[in-house]
Amino acid sequence: MAINTLIPAEKALEIVLKDVRPIGDETLKLKHASNRILSTDLASLRTQPPFDASAMDGYAVKQSDVASLPTDLKVAGEAKAGTPYAGSLENGEAVRIFTGAVVPENADTIIIQENTLAENGYVKVLEGTPKGKFIRLAGLDFTEGEVLLHASDKLTPNRLALAASMNHAQVSVYRQSKAALLSTGDELVLPGEATQPGQIIASNTFGIAASVENCGSQIIDLGIAVDTRDALRAKIIEAITRDVDVIITTGGASVGDHDLVLPVAQEIGFEFEITKIAMRPGKPFLFGRFHHKGKTIYLTGLAGNPVSSLVAFNVFVKPLLQTLSGQPLQMLNRLPAVLGCDLPQNDERAEYMRATLVTSEEGKRIATPFTKQDSSMLANLVRADCLVYREVKASVAKQGDACEIVLIS
Ligand code: AMP
Ligand code: MG
Figure (cartoon, rainbow, N blue to C red):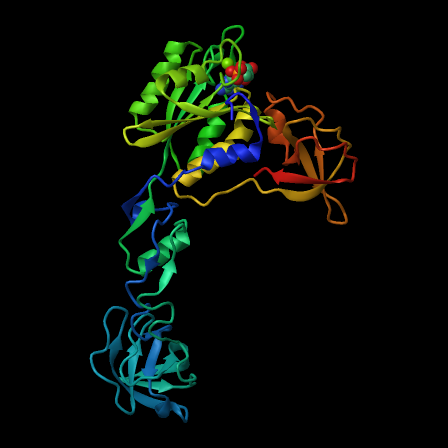
């Protein structure tokens, strides 16, 4: 396929993800593994609880000794969490026991403290407990060898606690891919800097950096490059030297005289398969690969217009980063809704239209695209609840017709 053809978005995603694999794994101490993705299944190294344990504070007794109540039993000793009772329970005896302690040999019943009176080395049992109640049998939670966590599981707080309980001090997780972010454009200044006539604030990379982190990747911020070949080349080479996996540029990805990302990256050695997508917003999109020192470095060149760059990031770059970092893929899910207004026939580019979303009294989701959809307009991206998806050449649609939406979180 010639690289300057308009490529359908689905086809482009296939090209981007072709042969992409996780970049590798590493072993981390559990306390450093929060939110990381397991690269292997995890079998428990322990049975939990490892012994029959009391679930209450009270007395461990034999059920046969508390058949008729009240009754007095001799307190033979104590079992607390971490220190078991050394002996074994004899007839007529009770062992003072606390939550988490090993249930003494021969005991089968826990009398809760509230149902007893302690007196002079004896305990008066006032009310009984069914046999086995308040005893957590060994293996109640899980047993040694049981596979409880799986490769591709994200180490959420609950899973981290379980891995610890399974006695794993360290875990094998996928390495995080490294993404370099570069804004390009003579007109750009950072928020808070003094502006000259004709300048605007560089906003794209702030949104993209936050998304990159959400995909479990690390960021190297290369700042802003002016629209010269030298400036761009220096930044791209800096990214390569810093061993990144993906270079994400914004701006300069189109066909204007000052759009230099494609030719400069080609000179460096990147080979491109995509330069534009049949999609709005997000038409200019460069995708190239460079094989360097045994690894593949990807370059994703996003458009300068903020909405284009964010939409194309979500459609193409996010799945790439997630795959490289072993993260589960979060594709843009399309949900059914109905249109809140008429729409004209669509052209040869699939469209994501910023829209409001309300739920009607009958429970229908009604999506109404804004009248103005210019890809420079960030405020209405933030005002939008969803994007209405329109396929290539979608025919005229009327208010109330079925449509597909992508929710904006
Ligand atoms: P370009 O893709 O470089 O032709 O830029 C398209 C439009 O996006 C122009 O109006 C640029 O000023 C604007 N633009 C480029 N980069 C950014 C950025 N990082 N943040 C906000 N707007 C940008
Ligand atoms: Mg530009």
